[in-house]
Amino acid sequence: MPAHDKAILTCALTGVLTDPKQHPVPVTPAQMAASAREAYDAGASIMHVHLRQQTPGKGHLPSWDPEVAAEIVDAIRAACPGVIINLTTGVIGADISGPAACIRRVRPEIAACNAGTLNYLKLREDGRWAWPPMVFDNPVEKVQAFLDVMQETGTRPEFECFDVGIVRSVGMYRMAGMSSQLADHAEYNFVMGVASGMPVDADLLALLLRWIEPGSPWQATLIGRQEIWPLHQRVAELGGMLRTGLEDSFYLPDGSRAAGNGALIEALAACARNAGRAIASPAEARTMLNLASR
Image (tube, rainbow, N blue to C red; front, side):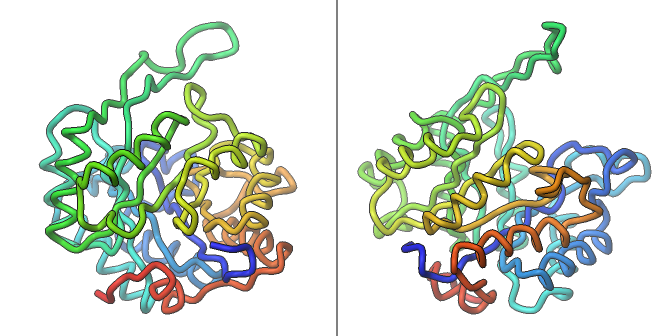
């Protein structure tokens, strides 16, 4: 997308494991809908949705209950007319039955499709692991299984790429004909800021754009604190879609903590406007991404 095109804003509402007792992340359908509405009013056309357990005291844990998915997505759609839903799918291991059931239940316009495997690591300052070293496994057969479900429901895959080789793999998925939805283009999401993946780096971002086909929709998920905001600005200048939210950061450009998703999306919209780009409405975003209405 050339830089003069309108900017499509995505709000990553809540994330996987963030504890609502420690951070202002929404968990219940009502909370998710209210937080989405704040982001929608600030300019977000797409809501990236993670599902949380609804049992009291379990809101810091993910859920793959399709009825929970329906409650949350229905509440967001009711609160935000015309909004585009982007559903998470990330799981460890070969069993994708949980996210597959949720995709089939809510039929999101977009769903994340993790495009490759990564050693998912983080080290503390004292040299201890922040969590036990783990492998976020996404072999080709698992990617294919997700693409098959998305093909069935008419859901557009958004390829989450945590490393350079994963970015390049997406082009191979297209060439291998893994989904007819990839015939025209693939949609890329460069995930930058995971400690064992790609860093938040403007020079690297520019290089990544060499490895996608011209005209492909793309965005960058930037994980971190206030250091992410200059790169958000660069994404806006280079013509990418823009994403932030409490899944990715708790911090505004001035280093202060955000009270919620609305403030983060307001700051993201400012990046777009600073680059001379207007903000796309949900209807305009659907047209730009060639998405059907739900």
